[in-house]
Length: 325
Image (cartoon, rainbow, N blue to C red):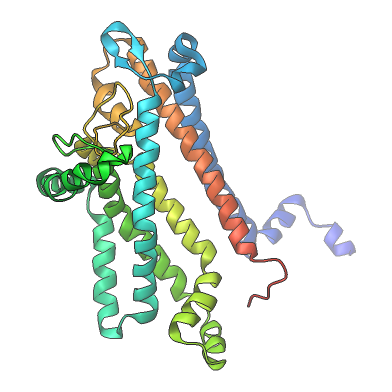
């Protein structure tokens, strides 16, 4: 004890850093703080840049339609509606399909096909969004207009306003949602596959030992164990759909004035609106309004990420009183 008291301050610091624990802790803390600083910086830049628009329009900007930069009329409601609806369509389509693809690759796929199929799924995730947009414009939109949209609008659409016509160019909110679903599908599938692959084998063996079928084993043992990770993958795909720009801009139709009741009608998303108009803003108010829409999109993303973390936390806890390995 007496010898320890005679150590100088520098010697004590050297002793604590000898095994690298303090250095490693400081390094990881530094990078964690960088992430927080980037989020704060983005929030500050969008808040400061949107000051003129917030002063001019107030909170009512979020609930107004109409878009006429020449006359100074701006409304964010069509962009917010297009963003949320197209992203919801994408998640509803890609979520179940991506989860099932992940289950197949992890649990049911033959060993000789697992690596090639997994590589193809990851390759789809690496394709640039503009390629998806070009494919949507030249291939999918003509097919969707003639083979799907028009028959549905002429039959079901007569009684369901969401699926009503007229279907003109074929570009619209529904097409954008489907293209976004194709884009986020490989992300959800790859994350689901990775999460399921780390489920302990004794979870499977315990279910099979009591006479469960393979389907019952997957449904009752594997999927509940990996539920938190699967939800995290779904939220990651939703985040990409919310912020997608080029593909959405190319296929959604860029109708900014109002909200049309039919999903087959053209619309606009917040990211697509900002990308198309910010480089050529007419004046300071126009640019500030677009930055305000970016701030709204940033807030929507933060809110959904918070809800996602709550869902993941709730799923990770499991049912009250349950026993988990």
